[in-house]
Length: 143
Image (cartoon, rainbow, N blue to C red; front, side):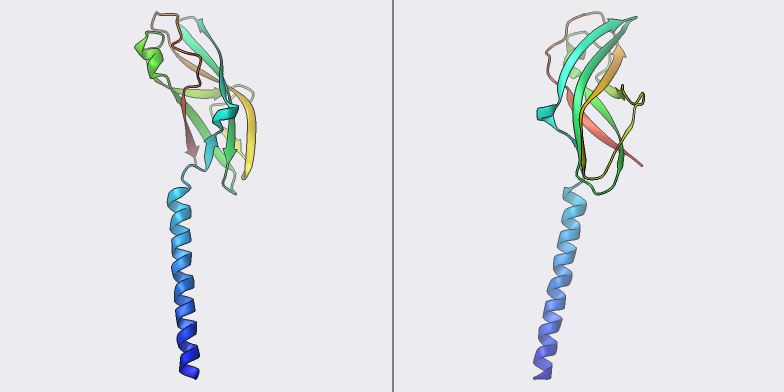
């Protein structure tokens, strides 16, 4: 009778260890993007050309799913604007206007809504924007 109980405890312990490993792997590999852009609350605002620079303004909302505070940067892909001749380079880093910085800290398990950002790139000569959509934005976590 004692051996049967011992076997049951060993099996239960083994199952708990396996579940713990599976959950840990899931959290590590499937929650890489802990800070995301909330697409439905983010949008293109305006653009202007000043002294051979294109200034593109967007409003973004960000969500931190981590329990930890995260310091982040964001970059935007403007390949369409390069293709039509507005910009000379496609990947531009955002500047958080209210914080006067290219990085921002977002508290754990929180949301920042309607943050104004500015992307600045070198003007390529064609003063036309391909569309007024939000660019593809990448969140970059900083240690």
